[in-house]
Image 1 (cartoon, rainbow, N blue to C red):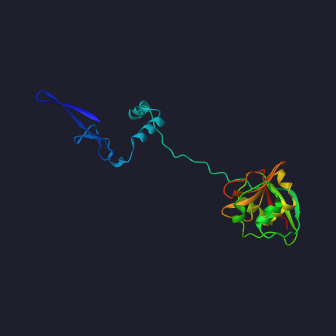
Image 2: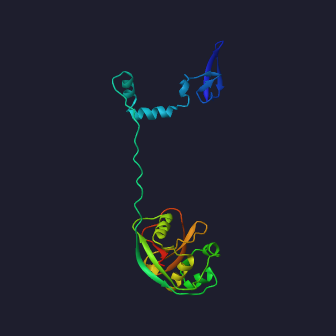
Image 3: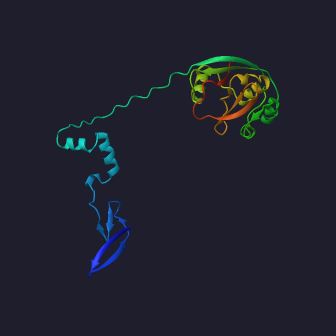
Length: 231
């Protein structure tokens, strides 16, 4: 609030008037501007905060005035941004080879049950309900570790280049049933079947084992093992 004192016929009267803004340019009082308008014609969209930022970049108002007086020289040049360095080629190392034997299960829920996990994600049965389970014939699976944190797309490309298709949920579930101790050494991930943006992975340590979901977005940690079919 702004208080304005007027003297009328020797009597002091107190009038009260709200501050208003005139189109964002300045305050007005009784329709008159209370300060000088700061309008620069073709630079109407320039903000006062930008002026302060520019002055700070120049070294302050004294430096700017020295430029006006010709005592200092201002040089403006384009900044050359360095080109983005492409990621190094992904190198995979086969850590272990597992042979999976044929087995029959009626559903993902049954495969989880006979896997005897200490923990699991409740959404797995719903999300992977339509995926094939069980193995009709033996399968040879290699567990691969990469030399840096990889993206799923990079690992799929590595598998295609090396003629190694990624394992599917049925292979990962078979590992959990037939090779239960493998996941105690490192998490094991299947990359071949994403449901609702997630894939399955086995995780554990010396005291417990689990079957979980993880998102396909972002990078995976290099310590994880990723399953591919070797034939």
